[in-house]
Amino acid sequence: MRVYLPATTNVLRTLVDEGRLPAPQTVFAVTPQLREFYAVSDAEADTEELEYAALLTAARASLRLIDLDPMAARRRVVLAADVPDGSVTAMDDPHVERGAARLTSEVRLADVASAHIDDADAEDDVRKAVNVVLEADLGSEDAQFVVDEAEGHELGWYASQEIGTVLELL
Image (cartoon, rainbow, N blue to C red; front, side):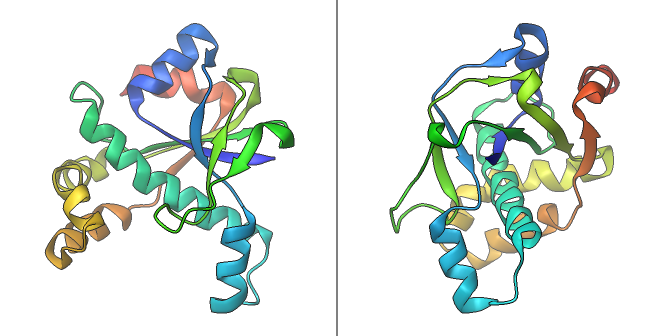
């Protein structure tokens, strides 16, 4: 199953240095809850569109992780990884994002298909969004506007073998 793991640049460094990230992890994926939501709101959505929705939700979660890690670069990071189906359990809770799941297996660098990372031009908007993402989660329209500015930046796509090089350039 393809999952999208929200991360920071420091988490990415750990993955490269140690070759793995320990379990458990919160990830995002095409879960039954995500499919059900899109069946109502966009019945024509295909798997690729649902995976993109899961990736974007993971990117939002990355903002929350950056808030907790003052040493991380102010760039959203999402890892796309292929993991065993049995190690992923959807969170069936109305208080969590659709597509949220619990991953019970470690993520090895070999499991990572790609990394999605903000470019340098997003850093200022990401920095501002990190400062207000929790307020946006609680319903502040002004904070949501700031978060939307950061989310307006497309994440860059990097193959797994490029991750080390990308980290060197940050």
